Length: 146
Image (tube, rainbow, N blue to C red):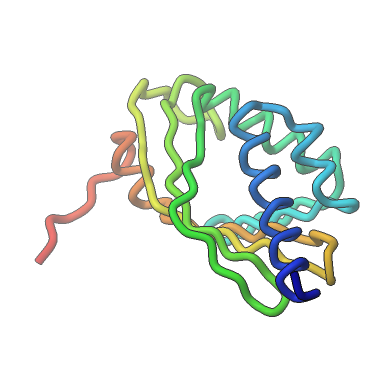
């Protein structure tokens, strides 16, 4: 295997371990996939840095959506990143930001950029559609398509 193919395979293995361990609520494993965790949520502008901030965010989201899971759809490789298209789903059984609990479920397609410095994961940058999630949870009325 060439060095570039080996690096690509290693990066993909790190990303898959990261995503699968979050499905298992094994946040220690997820956090250990990068030495200095940085998690950026583009829809809300949140930037979480360090083990404590990232873990606290993941725990908060699992309190609100205790069955939250991701399902990998496609994996793409770039020079300094692995881009994952995935489906995120969960049921709103707890409050995330003080909102009323709806008990409804959401399922939305998202993308995450896992940024690397050689073979070291340095950041997960997540892009998602908050309006679709809020609509599916009954928190936002979206107009009919035109």
